[in-house]
Structure formats: structure tokens, C-alpha cells
Length: 108
Ligand SMILES: [Zn+2]
Image (tube, rainbow, N blue to C red; front, side, top):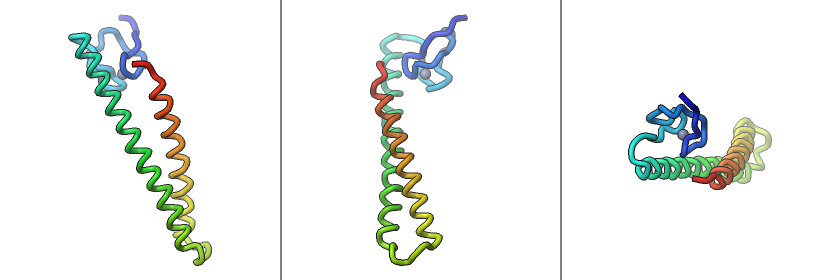
């Protein structure tokens, strides 16, 4: 048994494995089918990352909007919550953008 790199996610897997244990890409059968399955898995992962970054952006914008609309009310718990949401949304969004960037650099 040898270890090979998964054609989809690049993680180390057994050359006997029928499905990648990390990304669940099928590895047996027709090489063309394996490649197209890998491509579909990549597209799905890319779509997932885009969805997450969209949610993160909404959390970020909602936090800012809430803070902006209720700025005069002083430091209340909901303002704190809005600021925390803004911070989390921002960090989450940046993290996801970096992941998307690195993901797009990967060779298929
Ligand atoms: Zn994989």
C-alpha cells in the first residue's frame, strides 16, 4: 500500500482507496470520470466557500448597519452584539477570501 495525493484535494490517501476520505471524490474507474468527478467536487467546494463568504459579508454589513442606526443609544448590550457581529463577520470574510484565493491557485 502506497500513499498518493488525491487529484481533487491533494491530501495523502491510500492508492487502494476507492473514495478520498477527505473530500469524498471517487478515485476508481474511468480516469475521465474520476477527473470530472474531481472537477465537480471542486466546483461544489468553490460554491460552498462563496456561500460562506456571502453569509460572512451579510453578518458584517448587518453589524455595521445596526451600529450606525442605533449609534445614539449608547453602549447597550445589543450595540456590543452588533460590534461583535461586525468583527466576526469581517474576520470570517477575510479568512474565506484568503481560502478562496488559495483554492483558485491550486492546480486541478
Ligand atoms: Zn480528496
